[in-house]
Length: 445
Image 1: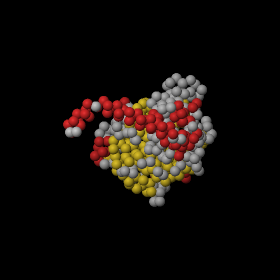
Image 2: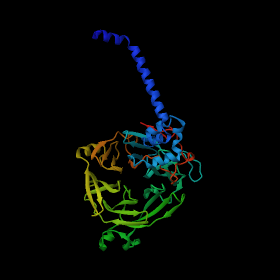
Image 3: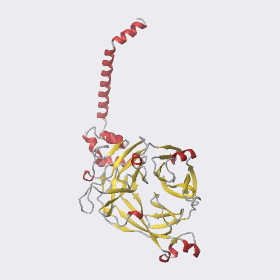
Image 4: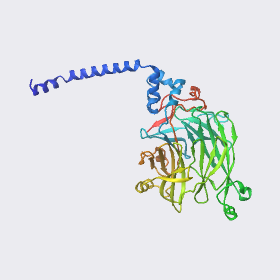
């Protein structure tokens, strides 16, 4: 048979070929279904536990068993064995206290997340006017401050399962408070630490307790001091707060605290620039000052935990104008900051193209550092391991509110984060959970 005849026969029998292809596809699907059906349930559960969470919530609609698997103790154990996941970035603003934007680096996409404010505070019916703002995050849990009817409440939530605690009254005004959160990975119990900064005049402070490197009387008279009061909430004793140790510092606490190896680190800020580093040991309820010199020309800085190492990301410049962004790592052996990275000048110019003041917000965890420029839609991410920078897609929250001052946290999207502080899944009674896009109130953009 010639080539032309062969070509002619193929074209005239195209419908038969399509029928044959469809038959093969159906047989392959039946064979695939039989293979999945023959797999033991515990093996399927292991596969589901390792899926990215957006994919997992999509697969929950396959069958009833997969939909209810989230509340299975055995599946909870499997999820707890999954190593640390890539952190997501969650951005909020006081101008939009009911909604935040969350970035998933695996899919390079933003989601809109609505805070679970449809609950009662202090026995009062919810009037749908609750305002919630995240203040800390750790191991899959998000800690928020909720404001209603002139009172503030603490709310612990797993953003992925929508499981929430009952609101707990906060003993202090969160306007002057920095927060940290620590989770015990073995028992899943957690603690929330609030550090309140109270300003005092020089005459009310005992000089012996001041955490300052200054020793002359002249410097002490010119300095301003602040007393840091500590309040601790423990999941093992719900609905109660206990007082921690107090500490006196020169200046005040700056934003950008970090939790590293169960120790909370804070930057102290003087009249014009950061002037020191202090730490609170939760285990021993003890404050201490880190004898480390802050870099010259540092205007402001943020602290980040990098696999047990403390990093500092700061803006350098003069006259309150940032001209450089550098990254340091704390060398605990020499108590010194070691430079490990810089934002390239070309990216610096593009990053601040919409921000005359050249200030930014930073959040990070693990190998990722996220930077968001004030009053701009520009967001950058730096991979410490790969040592590269790239821009994120425009943040929908910053697009909607371009003039806000954003705040952000990194959190691990985990299913095994229990708001009850127990090594078991949260019951359905405190979860509002059915699908990734609907009941969990995540909006894919």
